[in-house]
Image 1 (tube, rainbow, N blue to C red):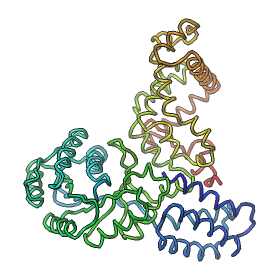
Image 2 (image 1 turned 90 degrees about the vertical axis):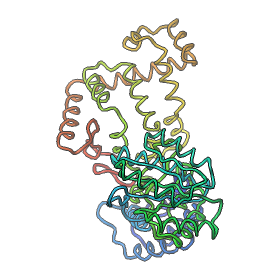
Image 3 (image 1 turned 120 degrees about the vertical axis):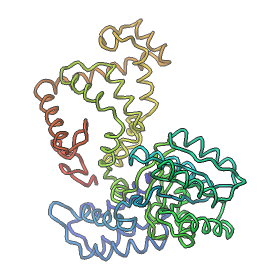
Image 4 (image 1 turned 135 degrees about the horizontal axis):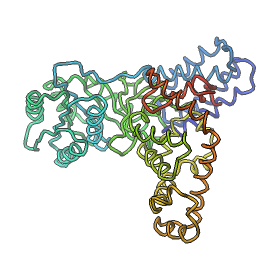
Length: 476
């Protein structure tokens, strides 16, 4: 997400490196580079103008704070203004009403509307602990009703049946009555999409909105369409009292123009980002975290939340205890690799770490290969339980058997064994007192509520990490 824009912005900040103060000349040069980066990202022109006017005005009178150089001070200013223009703070769904809270979802065909409803249903069920009912009022596309039914089953929420012969208003009225009887907290309504905005579509959706009177009306828009996404959202916002936007396909949007333009053009907050094809690939939109990732500073808060939510804490604790005793084996390594895959692989994790933009692509590809992780798991799976705990047993004929069983070669098996032996050596260095102290520190933070169970608070680790309390916030 935003890969190209992150690279271009990083380059634009370099014009201030080595400068002792912010002057009118070097600020103008930096702003010219930022403008170029935003134009290439397909950010709307009026958004660029407002943003850069604010940056230039504030930069010229900017006092460089203690511990910062001019480049870092300028980046901080860009971070603040960019966060403000895309929304300032996270705005969550407002579900404070007599149940069921009705959430109507609109959008053009192909934007990912029906899939987004399923993702949102899963999010509300698992992370907000809501009982959810979904219904399709799209009577123009029979496949849409079936699609929502299949997705509802997949995410394990209730589905209210409808047919193309029913009137949308009647479908939703009946679904609402059913939701009241069955004590559902939220009713998600899928509406008809079109290939483009037309008067008939707008008339129908306005009538439905008036009849349904939802507490939230969300518009789903495809971020891959850039500025067009913002202008399409504006057309809907002018016709409907929208309460928020779901921006989809952001994982494939290297430019980021839509995310940076939508809020300013529509005046409506982005509430969620679709970040992949998987049914759990929906994230609340936090402007400050998005800008932090955009500027190469990472998003450690989201990373810690994700790890806390997705990892098996009992297995983590068990592995940590085995590490402390020097008993960590290949079976434990396999569990860690599988947990990493559960969170979207190394690539998804490292995207949120500070300074990743400074690492060459060739190195990142070696570090983040999902195929490599799968290969390592396959090799370990081909070993016997005894081989996983006694690595010295794995000699010539055993290596050949493991390679054949995993569909790899002996070189790949050797490489895995070497990597594991390096890990073991590292753990032995940390053994005894050091490991026990670290375990005690983690337990202390968990007990005091400073970190989620099983997860260390990275900002309080010795030396910290770039972008957090203990390190240099700016990797430039």
